[in-house]
Amino acid sequence: MKNLYALSLDQAVNLVATVGTQRTVLLQGHMGCGKSSTLETLASMFPDHHPVYFDCTTKDLGDISIPSLNTDEGYVKYLPNEEFGLHLGKPVILMVDEFGKANPAVKNALLRDMLERNRFPEGSIVYATTNLAGEGVGDLLPPHARNRIITVEIAKPTAEAMLEYGINDGWDLGVLGFINNFPEVLQSYQEVPDPESNPYIFHPKQQRAAFVTPRTLHIASDTLKMRDSLDDVTAQAALTGCIGQRAAADLMSFVKLADQLPSLESIKQDPDNAKIPTSASAVGMVVYRAVSLIEKDWVDAWLRYMMRLDKRWQGFFVNNTVRSAKYNQDKKNVLVTNARFTKWCTENGYMFAADKV
Image (cartoon, rainbow, N blue to C red; front, side, top):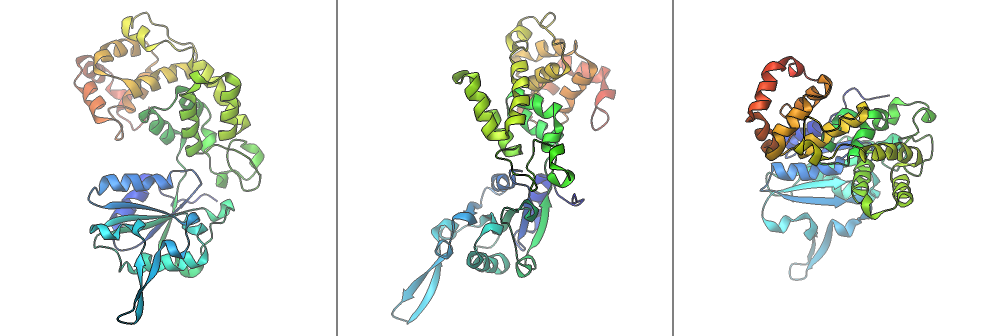
């Protein structure tokens, strides 16, 4: 059953940033949904903190602390591993990754730090991540551990959210078209009782060598950006090993469609006559590319071309640029200071008055 109180990554980061100095939050979510990326986000929010990534799958007790013998006084004390950065004299952001997969001794040792925080400088943030227990990949926590921390579930990002992220991150156009046309690739197995009904995703009831997650979509995009150096068979094999055979076949159809798009140069040089694709999927990829790459020297040309497109795609461009909180601020400034764009907004304000078109 889908958790109605599952948080987005942004909400989870805000929770950790708010309570993480006092209480440990455990982010529990689907594999490949971006849990580990939260450390980079928190590090940007707290630049005076030292970020620490602690991967429990590779650690034993000696990686947490080691005994130091004081022969003069006749006692042993435990010193923290240098990896924790406690010698740097500033607060840390400690992410305990894959906490559910840690061996029992490591779990118990870390729980004390999570609860008491005596070893950490004031203002330090401690949190942990793990996969959903239902995935069956060994992420188990005993009741006494759960009773010491705040456990929240991370929602798998929607296709809409993934599309926004991919556009802003400059993903391959074929991958963006694939996500837009196959939103089910980002379904949770919790929503799919029968694994046969969605052949793209991980499902604990069916063994699949490769499947689609936000992480593997990112890998697929990086692979396709190097496609000029690969023949089609090699590219297809790489994608199959990344996102699975069915997904790779469907994705390649969008990769080939992207090859047929009007070039940026043709839009820049002759926006009134540059080719407009007949396929809605292809038009979408043209707009995704503009959102990702728009620059001051061809804003006017793009806007002239855009006004030839269906109103839906004009609205999509605006909603994913000036109305997107995550869009690059410099690019946003280029648009809002452009006379042609402000005129369009005045004439078509109804298209972005609602949250989405």
